[in-house]
Image: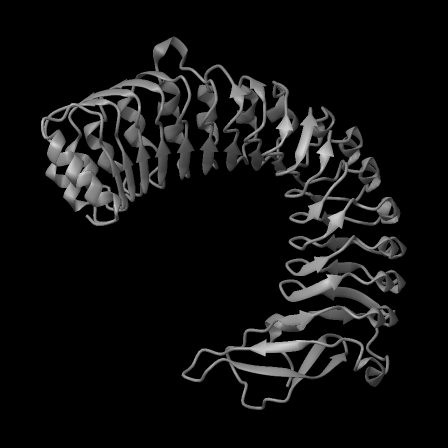
Length: 457
């Protein structure tokens, strides 16, 4: 029985006339099947693996029918190098282990090699450099070690390269900048060090560049900020330090996702980002940014996520008017501005923010005034945090309308008066923090807080 459609495209080649029997024993695997009925989970060993236009698995267990969940375990044999007509190998999301065979280098017709989400170890085989027809190389989420071998500089036809989420070390090779057709580069979540090579600025076709979670230092080469085709730009969780270019949004008009959190960026948020009309996600939390977010960020109508927590941002002339302009971002779901130096009165138009908003975090600032009575209009909020500010007055009854609220953090302010009984309507609430305020029912409140912190409301 052939594998179901979703699992058949494991190994493919462009020549269907080659004698199948010659390849029957070239790949050995164990197939683990499970199906959702009253029967226990069944296990079946491979009977034979046929390499035709697609790899097919024949089953000994004739009872195995629908609802199959398949994955392969074991190691790749060196004899895989005998399949010289292969153009595509896709072994994504299996349980292969051991080293990737050097014999892969004999597959001179190979164009697509996907080994992601397995447990391959050892080094990236240098002989892959002989597969000069490769267009895509993906070894994401494995246990590979060592550096990216210089021999791979011969893969000039690559348009997709991903070595992310391994244990690779060394520097990012500058010769990657010679891959003129490259449009996707993913090398994050490794242990690369040193600076980002200037040569990467020559990748004029680049659409996605992802370098997060390494030990990169220095500056982002200015030439990369000039690649107008970039959509995804991620350098988060490194040690990069510089001011963001003022014309960044003009030079990157196609920018859709920009991640620079947990670095050492300084200076102001470029107002030119308003020109990146496709921008959906913007995260520069945990840096050293200063100044006030520009009001024209409110023109980013595709914006879904914006976080600038843990910086040194301030509010111009002591007001928070820029928050009112964000009401134009009608798709906004996450807004994180906590742990900054924002001051001024919380503007009433904050309740006009996107009805899709589910995360509003303004804690640890210098904000004063009252929470608007109609805060309940933000009906999709799951987290509302304004702790450690200077907010006063009573807690508005409208909070009780936030039926999806899971966490409410109001502690360390100057709230007074009775605690509204409408909080009892928050049936999804699992975390409630209200200590260090001026409620005259403080003792009873503390007992209630301990109760709700354990997830019972």
